[in-house]
Image (cartoon, rainbow, N blue to C red; front, side, top):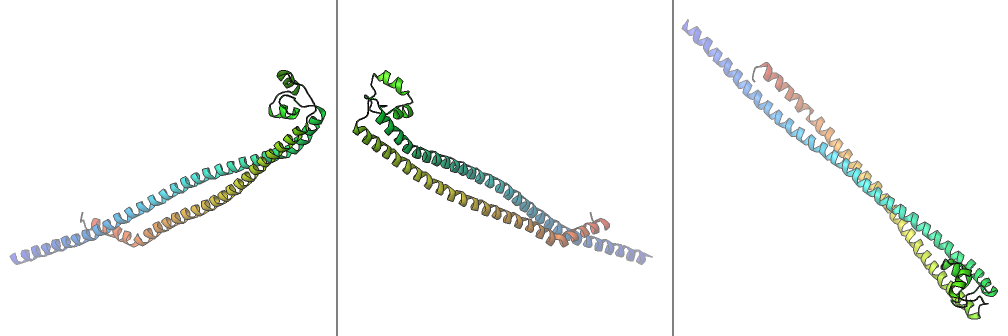
Amino acid sequence: MRALLSSIVATLLMINSSHAFNCVAAKVMHDNYSQYRDRVQQELNHKKQDGERLGVEMVNSDAKTLRKLNLLIEKYGRTLQETGKTTHERQELATDYDKMCYELDSGFYCSKCLRSRTEIEKYDRENFDVHIRRVRSTTVRAPESAYRRLYDELQRKGKEKSNKIKQLQQESVRIEIEISKLKEERIKMKADFEARIAKTNDDLLTIARESGPTMYKLQISEFELRDNNCY
């Protein structure tokens, strides 16, 4: 009888010892799987944060580029308007010259300030008759020197207008090139960001796919620990 009891006790001890050993092994495996899960989760979080950061950077960079692009487009529009205005002013010089020559011939000429009616009214913004009374001048037919002075003055102004038009045209070309370059940079920048975001998403899928089997083993180990009362 004593021998039987001893055998039973020994068997129970062996069972308990085997159970304890199995639990220890299961817990070790579970701990390893849990650590792997934590590392994977941390890596997934980093990748998600990278994707979100890239998305924000793309939006901010694109907005900054658009602001620059809009400013250039506005500047280009102003340059075209100024070119058109200056071209019209240059064309007016020829009309003004013919008109002022007629005025010099007809006596619409101030004997004091030696200028025609158009020069006084257009550039000084003063009525010719009012000007004559104000400066106490008289109207006379202009001398030959007035014609030469008028011709030289209009030639000088015409050259100034032509030089300004040339500069404006060069500026327009420069702005066009800058706009084209900025548009290309914007397309390239967006494509680069989209490629980096796509790679980040691919990395997330790869991590999730490759970690699947181990995550499954982690679930199995949790079931085994619970079923074997190893907690």
